[in-house]
Amino acid sequence: MSFTREVKAELVAVPLDKECCARAELAALTRGASILTVSGGRGFSLRYRTENPAVLRRILLLLRKTGAVQDKTRMLVEKRFGVRRLYLLALSLEDSRRVLAEQGMLVADEAGEEVFRPPSRQVTRRACCRRAYVRGAFLASGFIAAPRRRYHAEWVLPDEAAARHLQRVMSHLGLAGKITSRRGQGILYLKDGDEISALLKLMEAARAVLSFENDRAEKSLKADAARAFNCDQGNLGRQLAAAGKQTVAIERLSLARGLSALPGELEELARLRLARPEASLEELGQMLSPPLGKSGVQHRMRRLMKLAEEVQGDPA
Ligand SMILES: [Zn+2]
Image 1 (cartoon, rainbow, N blue to C red):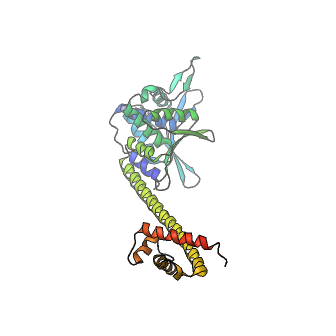
Image 2: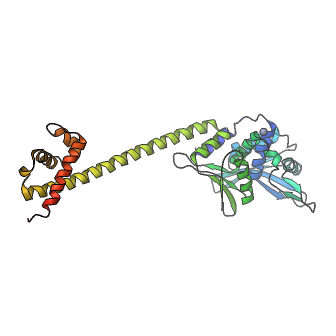
Image 3: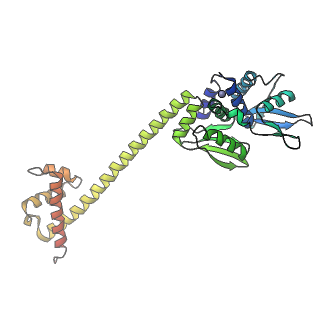
């Protein structure tokens, strides 16, 4: 099951305690998952459509809870592209009008014509209802990528105005969604891991929050390990490069003057370096007699390198 499906499966089971919130969740579903057709001059006909039967059951439950439907609803299933199915729930003309009017989505304009509007501010006035609205909007058109891949949540809305409306509702809950458009549709999206986690929390998807945080922790652990590994590789690379230069310099000294011409403590280090090209200066220090700390070895190595620079000018 995709992460989106998992989240939705959890959201459709969130208890409907307050009627105000049920109304808000339904308003978001009406805004995001319905089609409105004018029925031969007799009025609007409202149809909810979704590919997810659990979402359709949730819509039915919300319609009952808010008492908005009185007539029989009709369920239709459309087959699309072979395996895909589209579930449709059609309301009677009277119920359609009632649902839209209750949500402030059907308003008369100046000419007295009824026009379809976003849900009224009243619907999302309370914080509890805003959360329910965001949940409904997610059920209608939301998508969340599996957190182990990337952090991305988005809502595909019928147009940019609908996306702006949802963006406003979410901003009151501390989420700063961004908007883009795709083939005339309004896309609202979040790309921040903290915000997506907060989104799941406010929609009351407790299990999804846990699995999201789990994946996130694992991901950051892996990133830390990779960073540490790369860092080790980097250090090792630098160390080997430095050792290579030292070896070349010492060989030059050896050819020009012979290592036995060096002061005893430098000769010892020079011979050790040639014998152990992979060892760090610290390790070389341990092999000296008596052993010497890292900074002491560094000091001696600098003297050796300086001598090697001097012999560069010597006649070969
Ligand atoms: Zn409420």
